[in-house]
Length: 395
Ligand code: CTP
Image (cartoon, rainbow, N blue to C red; front, side, top):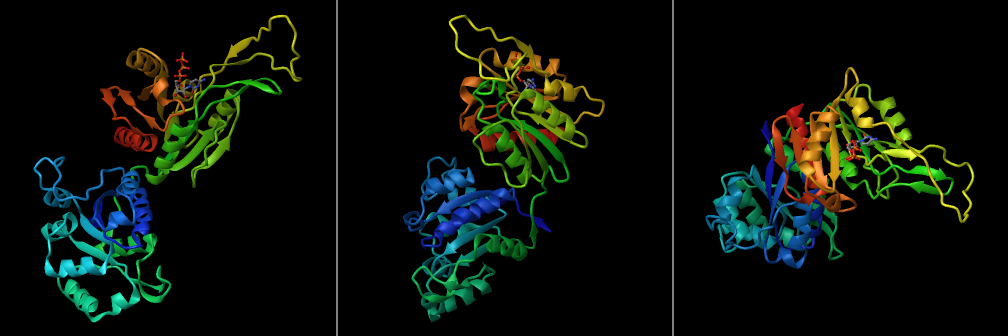
């Protein structure tokens, strides 16, 4: 069976272009990289920026692109692909394919391809039933082009009949069966991953607490990416405003001590422990049961150290593969490496606190026994996938 890893998704002009956005999400979630190419008409229905954000890759719309080294995007982009899928494929685009027209990037790529071509037609039922379209469909099938759909039902124009584009999940299933393809292996299939995320809060009295600026975004992104990569994820989370990732087992905690207990209770049988939480280093020695009243005297609060969860797990007899995070304000790499060795862990991800805390993007540098591996600045989801790929190689 062919493994499908990289797909060119061509989008042509039609109202069903909005479904292409969801299709990209489905494909990316399954570990497939998607290179989106849009016709001018497609850009009237959905923006390249939307498709770029969802696919994580620059979207191509033009034949003449100086950013492609050899100036031949139609060759360069299609040579990497396991297949080209045109979804939605308009009646006009299918007619162009029949005649071998090559007057824009997508039609030229289809002509220049050396991989399978699949089309998902989307048009009004009269257009689909017209003798011209039916002749074109017959010719495309004869030329070896695979036809996914169309579906029947209520159409955007209000009429009912054959011509709707298949729904993204159905399209994806048909794509795999038409290509007799399977998904790329998921690197964390069968692996159990425990992740801590977010801040902790250490109570001073019933209404006051010591906490920090961690948003939990990095830990939640890692949990989501690990699930996509096949892991069975347990997420021990301090208080955040984030939606829990689907399919993760969530354990909500508040204090560092609660986080420690939750981790210890769930650590057996874990393959990987990723300690992303910003655990408070100290807790209040004697939190007051009642609200502390204001007075003119100075107030001293005694703080005592919290246990280091990561170091404790790493020191266990059958410790999972332990990964730490270091958010520093200075001497980033030296301090991160010092932490890695002090906590006796194989891998640490370092970032500058000012560039990471509460932000949507991060710039991670990974440090392991082999040395220093800088990752590019990118969304936390992308950084999370890169980190997990690195872990998968080390396991
Ligand atoms: N960590 C932990 N338990 C703690 C403190 C930290 O598990 N009580 C983990 C964090 O989740 C992170 C790593 O240890 O993966 C480093 O945390 P960090 O706060 O950067 O380092 P500390 O060891 O607390 O050192 P310092 O605060 O002095 O920088």
